[in-house]
Image (cartoon, rainbow, N blue to C red; front, side, top):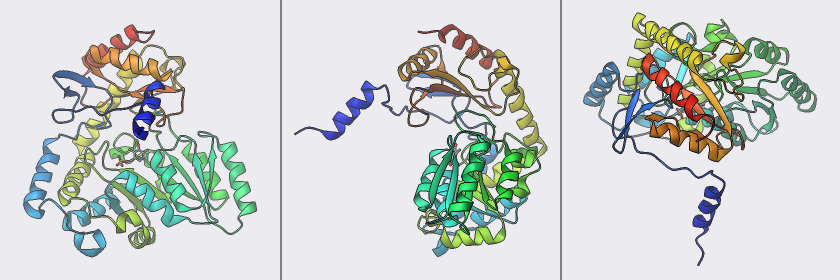
Length: 397
Ligand SMILES: *Cc1c(COP(=O)(O)O)cnc(C)c1O
């Protein structure tokens, strides 16, 4: 009898698309331990170094002491505990929205929210480089899905015209990210908002890689540009710069009340552990403190150091070589061929750096890359040493 999965896995290996897990034997941080080897980690989204922060740990421990471990039920039954309520109030205060709702993950926030906003005969217009959670949410909604080329507002405009003409009176939802997860570049937010207003569409903005990084107190790109009030649905995750776990939606009171009633990933899933909500509250308190703002400034110094020290890369869309400012903490090092990306990652690991290759289906086939992320917890010598190693290996193993 042939083993179906074995054959499929062999096919993945043949295409250099096979993936496996690597075990980290300790807490997250700028240095991690992988079976006996200590590696400087340039692949984490823990941009502010909060994942193992004492204040967050203490908040989680205190949360466990008071509220136990599991929430025991879904939020609408009996799983809503005080830390969940406090977290949602803190999120709304931080984002300056009327209301907020938290989910078990950013993924759950996306796949629960988009289908609650649009359905059959409505239209979702999605940026080509959107995260899988947004694609899955759009598909699950049953709405008509049109993808526009990355940040291509001309194409978005013609999709909007099409939607208005062919689906008159139906809802149109534009879905995009403020900082793109695998390319690190930003959406042209102001012009996006002008467009969506002109066509009476709603804007769903995923700020997963912008919060904690951009805007005063890390409120994100929309806040940095003074546009937060124009974004209908603000999504983010507690799992990246905030160092914890979970996702959120911020918006109007009626939007959030609607999601409580209609977002299936919220309704039909056990509430997140209350201790994690307590830790997320501590993360938000840190973000709005002076020390939090200083940490964010420190992150930007590290980002600038990385940009200045990276060797030139032809594939880099926003290369420092062309004089552009860094847009975020994410720096794609485009390699192209999958096996070459794996080989480069392996060479860097042998020199003590962890930057796994990013391949299809996370990015398009043939655009494999190293996704280099820097955090406030790295020090300058670590960044310099990494860039030296990268220039040594970048032209082939
Ligand atoms: C990571 C990520 C998510 C999912 O968030 P999780 O909390 O990890 O589930 C959603 N959108 C984008 C752009 C992301 O990078």
